[in-house]
Image 1 (cartoon, protein in one colour):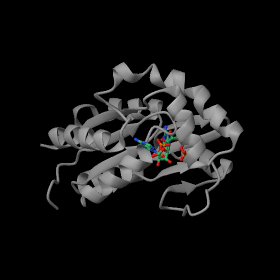
Image 2 (cartoon, protein in one colour; image 1 turned 90 degrees about the vertical axis):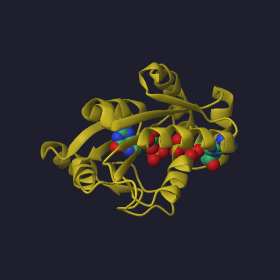
Image 3 (cartoon, helix red, strand yellow; image 1 turned 135 degrees about the vertical axis):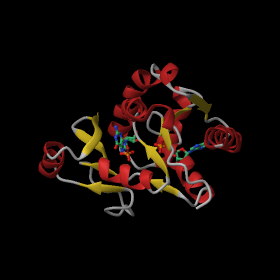
Image 4 (cartoon, helix red, strand yellow; image 1 turned 30 degrees about the vertical axis):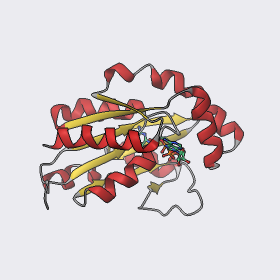
Length: 190
Ligand code: ADP
Ligand code: 5GP
């Protein structure tokens, strides 16, 4: 392990902001990075595997996990769909010196930041405009028009939290945004 310092990177944005894209690049760049796999009550998309992108739980199992105190934080992100960070994904890997990466919604990001303070860097990936955000979600094609509308409807609320974040990267040109993100992360990990 080359950078073992038990730090936390949190990527947040409205849906379609670029978290998954940047997450994949960060994982490739830092071999000692552990992606925190969340639990969710949403159904897997084609190609998604239980334990890799998410732990896909029924509502009843999600309730059990809340009851057992398994979550560091959880949110109802979209209509009736819950997502939560499992404590088991965090402390074990932190102790081992991994960098932990989170891809969570804006509210979850701020909860994790509050829990870990200076150990964590909360990064906001800001879409260039609502129109471009819509286009990217439509082009991605993983949600229905109704679901896209629901995600966009949440974006205003999510954008209002930008001032609470440690860093903001505008995701306009992808390569530029990536360079900027890398610099922000390198500086934090130094
Ligand atoms: P999130 O994980 O935050 O929902 P994604 O990483 O899935 O967002 O990005 C949404 C869509 O936009 C994807 O299809 C992705 O390939 C595309 N995308 C991300 N960043 C850019 C960019 N800078 N320029 C053009 N398309 C982008
Ligand atoms: P998706 O359904 O597109 O995978 O994710 C929807 C939203 O839920 C994204 O904004 C994603 O970052 C967020 N999310 C994923 N896991 C968690 C989590 O554990 N906690 C919170 N609060 N949000 C999460």
